[in-house]
Length: 101
Image (cartoon, rainbow, N blue to C red):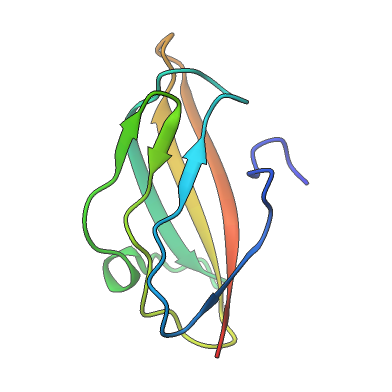
């Protein structure tokens, strides 16, 4: 596992589920600002506008991602989260979602 990959590792999500994931940034930096996220399918195509809605936010050391839904069964998705640490350093972490029926 990469040091940039979230400690929770791969996630499983049903094709009909809508899940709002959170990332605790304490392992990288405190007080994240300017959070952003991109969701890519296993081919590397950005599918963010198709599978996310809403807003992303940061409070304390926790980033609350946009809800993720409308995934395709038997597809894998890489969720990349970018943010700026309290010291102004840019960071990026990621995790995978495996979509199940």
